[in-house]
Amino acid sequence: MKKGRRSTIALGIHFGAHSVRLVALERTRKGIQLKHCCERSFPNDLRFAGTFDPLVKNASIQILQSMLSEIRMRSENGTVGLDSRNVILRRIPVDSWLEDDELQNQVLWEAEQLLVDPLEHYVLDFHIQDVSETMREVLLAIARRKTIEEYTEIVRKSGIYPVCVDVDLFALGNAYEYLSGNRSNGAVALMDVEPDTVRCVIVRNGFFYSGRLYEKSSKACDPEELLDTVIPRGGETLPLTRIVLSGSETFSEERLSDLSARCHCPIEIANPSRKMKIGSAFSRQHLQKQTSSCVISLGLALRGITEP
Image 1 (cartoon, rainbow, N blue to C red):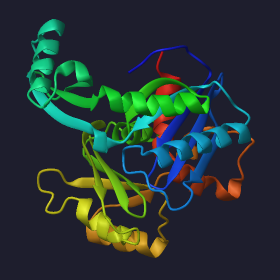
Image 2 (image 1 turned 180 degrees about the vertical axis):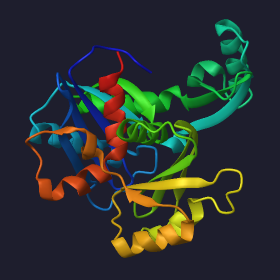
Image 3 (image 1 turned 180 degrees about the horizontal axis):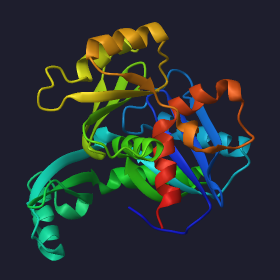
Image 4 (image 1 turned 90 degrees about the vertical axis):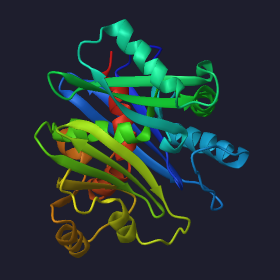
């Protein structure tokens, strides 16, 4: 969903399980500058699980208003992260010779087979990926229109102008694509780790291959157990060449070394500030932790500032 005006500043807003994350980027003549990176926890042990009850909704608006006041911004363009629990994702093979109208008709037909309500109750988005000279794949995303409207209403009430809604898993892949410029052969696992939630995206040959959110009921669950759950085992068909970690969880060098040995591939912590000009609002001491926890927000802001 895209609309509205072009600006030199773009915000990315991601609602995590226990906090709201916001990243502000500015387009300058020397490239993209990271202006602000904020994270605020929900009060009173509130937890966001993909949909907004009245308490989480009001808390989200108040948190975003507080963030905007703190960084002295208002009425900026924002890209909102849609929780993947609200989205149907499918990869659909299509013939390479299909023209635009034929391709769209096939995608719509495929979408209708997945839905219980009429198509007008949903918002569809799809991206075409060339697999070979004779075969393409369509990456299809479907979400209820009412859900998207709820997300944009919260952002609008906080004082941000919502210009785009993107799936959190796509945003994670978008951040990685910008930061690494990866177009090499092989599969990379991107994992955003919270205390009780892991979002995992597999990027193959530089393109989004698959994505899923994994959830545990206990807040105290061990992130390593989650990692063991989501990292593919016996990867004869899709061996991983690298794992990139982000999120609110921290990993010591010893834990990273142990995970790397068990997964049989290198593991690194995402460093979003590596390729960007850094604004004066940041403390260098806390920059790595701040930006690593807000990688999905970064991917959302990148979409808002790099697309026409």
